[in-house]
Length: 322
Image 1 (cartoon, rainbow, N blue to C red):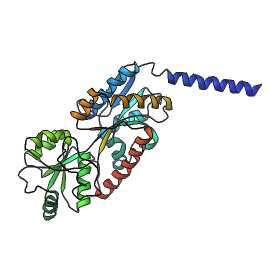
Image 2: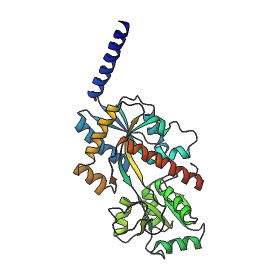
Image 3: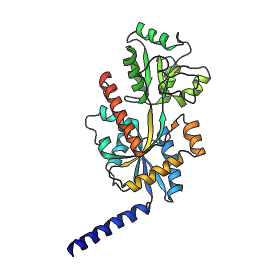
Image 4: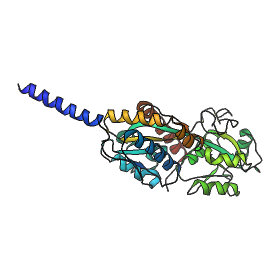
């Protein structure tokens, strides 16, 4: 009799939990963007957040919590209740780079988060001023090798994707250029156009108008395949750097322990949103991204792979936070 009572109580608790999960959501959802309003991460968060609002029937409120290279907002979600009502716009920087830069990071990427889906994948393009005496990658490498420690490249800050691209390029080509960090993409690009730095690994979307207008020359892109916005610009792998591939991403993640039915529901809705024409227009056509929409398991493997890659780059290049 006691065993039957216990089993009945267990079944009641399980059915109650299942009912709560299938009814999800019953109140507004907070979608935290770990960057300031107006940037690429904010645009992704608001675009997907609006589609989730429409699909789930509950308001998805975007909450911008910038700072510490994305670490403040990311840590906030790591410590949030695992109930599906707090989501994170996950990004390569805070999730796969910061763990190698900061010794006292307050969160653990693999322990504290439940992957939902990778939303985008974006690459960088190696650009030089049109007056630079190079047009091909071999010529560019020869120029760098002839001036060790004399040429400079700009980035949006320590640990940013364009910084890591530059350091990986140094490692793969046995060259040495000086990194010059700026506080934003526009400042770094202005310095390149003004001749204060020698080259840059810029985001594709930022570089497109400059290359098309002839203000910059594109040498190659960092992805494993060509950028749709630059179909005539080869990848660095095509040009001979066989082990060079660096892309970054924006994603949707939740706190670890979020019930599987909720993760699966969110995955379905975000993947569906990524196939909508207006989302493609905003994030792919205008944003220079490849849209992904993979499974939680597939995205978990991407995170593990990137943690390993960036760990090697940070260690080999001796990158330290400032």
